[in-house]
Image 1: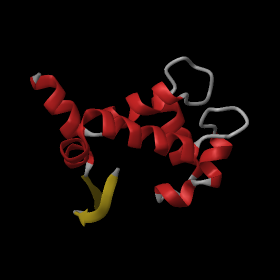
Image 2: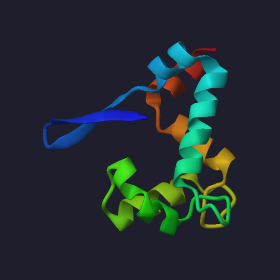
Image 3: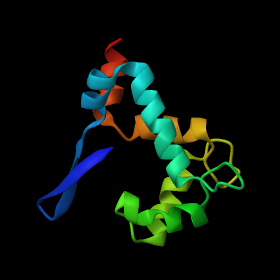
Image 4: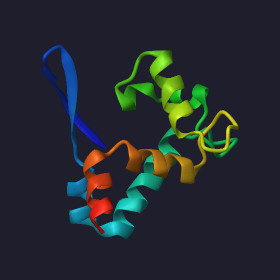
Length: 107
């Protein structure tokens, strides 16, 4: 989860809450919360996140631009099927959290 954006030099910088969530919830609890986020965004009939399901739920993400949604799908779509399964979503969330990635690199 990214926090509220702060404007710095005309760029929006988001505070990364994932490390604090891992510390508070533990690894299993954090993964459970990511899975809940996946279910919130997924197309319930297909069981994956599609562009259409992202558009329906874009207010939750704070995204209004179709191009941003397409970029999110493209960035996380590891198997090239045009949507995100639960594993791809979780991997994407970890990759988007620089603090989590830096901590993992130290382990």
